[in-house]
Length: 222
Image (tube, rainbow, N blue to C red):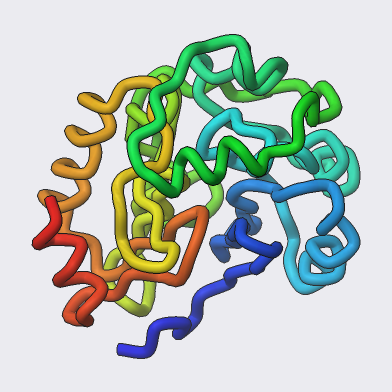
């Protein structure tokens, strides 16, 4: 299995955006920071984006949501539980769970926000993506934030899980660097292990591919 086989991954610094090809339109997962807008827009010329899914409400994943929603005439889907967070990333307490998390928080640019955007489809439970010709569904991966989502779908690699920040892979698979609920974050990792996807596609870092050392390290650590 090739790590990037038929994977539509847009690398934006240390944040990943993804596109899932659908028979009735393509789906953009996360939108990155504003400074990567032109880079992402160039990539999107290759696709027909019909829906934007935001894995959670942190600004590094949503800052271009309003722009690309207008550009592509694409509705936005995210958890109803993260809508307040998308408007103010400081509105809820979070725990720093790793040493890297302390460094990340110290390096963050303060008062950075996203332009307001409408959430056309607030997610409250599992949802199918069959409307877009995609054999997949949205699942809860609560913990990093209350409303963290993942997208599990069939691909040429087997099953792909677009995991947002439920799992980090920088530089190796690890627990989310911050979590609103560390307990729920661990439960979501256990859920991922039970689902046994062939590829885990994180919001930060390289894909984690079944059978590789990184995958075994992920399984072994948790």
